[in-house]
Image 1: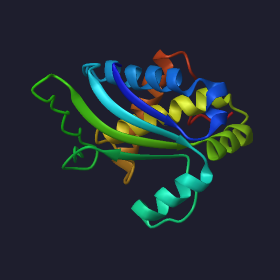
Image 2: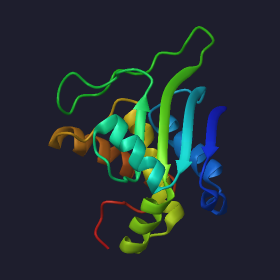
Image 3: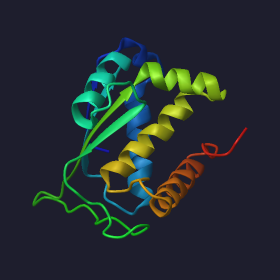
Image 4: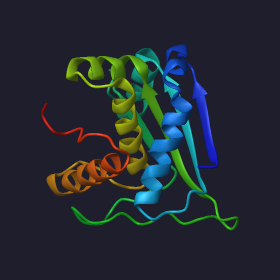
Length: 167
């Protein structure tokens, strides 16, 4: 991944080396989907207050969440369970994917509650957010099955457990 812009607003992210986690997770997602690594992604590593503001502004949900994604263009499949349109590179060969915001507070709380390693949980959420940038979603059963299956495969190749398996 050559073009990742990361804005670390919450200093607690530094202890996790969020930049390396994001680069690895995004790169693994692109490789798994046979997409070039010349992709642009912006990451906002923030806290619950900031992500709640973004969630209210963009989704009319004034509560914190773990991760939000804003694709640079609409890529969603035209039918439930279908594959999204692949991203098209610009004339220079670069693919602009979009933006991801991730909240330390919610991620840490979810990892703690589930008894998971926070770095593994964050890696899962960055893979999840990247798939959203690529047009995958979980709004219906077929789309959720496709997206979750990809997440499990990508994380498995990274040596991480299935995040949907009950412990």
